[in-house]
Length: 196
Image (cartoon, rainbow, N blue to C red; front, side, top):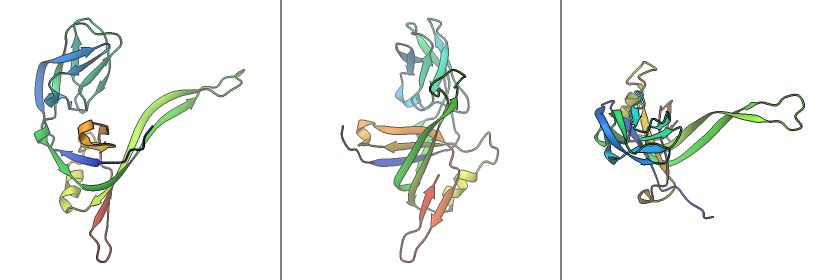
């Protein structure tokens, strides 16, 4: 076991542009299949893609950041993906981040019954919340968050928190909404902000 320290944090604003892919080849491994072209792996989280398996296995989950389909059983020799992806050119790095924190949690429902000697629990839904501190840019970042007013079309950001050198790809990454910013300023100091 070794101690690690944060190396980098990136927050990307998505301009809502999408690119289409049709029958995109995937690389199969057991019960998973990943879009082979690494430039097309960031799938549009607002419009689930279709993974087609020649072996007929049922899709049970999708990793929208890494372009992976999870199936109920081992997949056949050919899996393709049809849908929309987010190109790197449609992501803009924002928020000069200096530190970050991440909380991952899962709901547990009590499933104890009469006659049990110990409490039992059933795992429910998982969630995560991130906070990042950084330097205030200008009002542009606020406008990025509030650009769309409909909850269905609320702006999504791609969040990447690294625990090692980015080249080693040890990171927490996911799509998320920015729920608020809190700018602060002190005499003789740079204006900073907390992003949640």
